Image 1 (tube, rainbow over the protein chains, first blue to last red):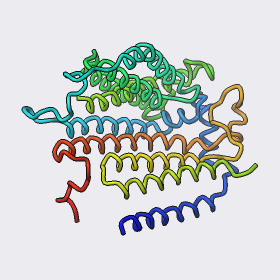
Image 2 (cartoon, rainbow over the protein chains, first blue to last red):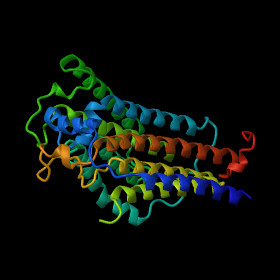
Image 3 (cartoon, rainbow over the protein chains, first blue to last red):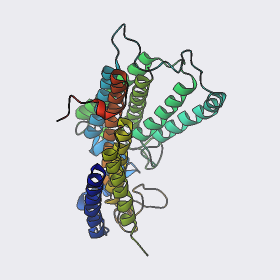
Image 4 (tube, chains in turn brown, yellow):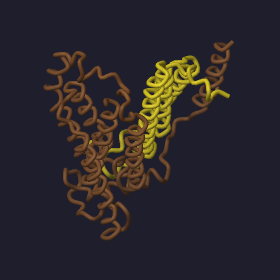
Length: 232
Length: 122
């Protein structure tokens, strides 16, 4: 009975989706808004990657909100997983405790791969306005490196307070740049507060690389905090 | 030419959504339900990106291969790509919260089955 019901629901959605796919005609022209973005981002902001230009500048307020969402998630995961004093730890202390540590393979692999992951993450963050990438993507790469580090060194040097302070400072600077944009430029998070520079070079596109770096640091630290909360 | 690219992407995305629906409805283990949710999430991202595809378009990044002049004629729609970044972050956040609830559930009920949660049943 249950199985039949599930099959019916899935099949019903399948019919709806099939109708959507069959009726969808591939778009041939861009909308007016897309054309505006595609001409304004390179010409006015000086960023070669249009998506990053939209994310950091035109939808900068939205991006700030996303970072706030990540912060709230880190906080609420901490609240949900917090154990009362005297309680035994929520998760089994399998790693770092008496149980077996990480294997030779993980530890040696981490030593080889970790610098490369962090380097790649930094590269993705720094080149967000020139090629595919940006603060969010690079931050996620850095956080994956942090996760590997936690697996390889369960009792490692990664300090929770350090992550929190890094995240908080990046957030403060992010908002400060936004307010600077209101004072010097045309509005909150306006990227015209710095000179536009030569199109296509590393230091160009006004404040976009700076905001991108802060965003990358903040996202990387926040994701690391979330991973760290799940660990402890 | 065969099947248009956006049609292939839409089919893939909607198939993932269907697999996710099936996983959520079929299983009683909360971890499998979370995996099903993630599949729905990923499928929706693919669908969103697919709606931004323009026939013959390339990535909206200006370099040697794509001059500023032809940017408005030869690229895909950048807006869905920018919106999907938001969607990915929200999906990640929801997954993280659900996983922490799953850990809580396991700590108090010693099981991952949602059948253990009888008091909130209607």
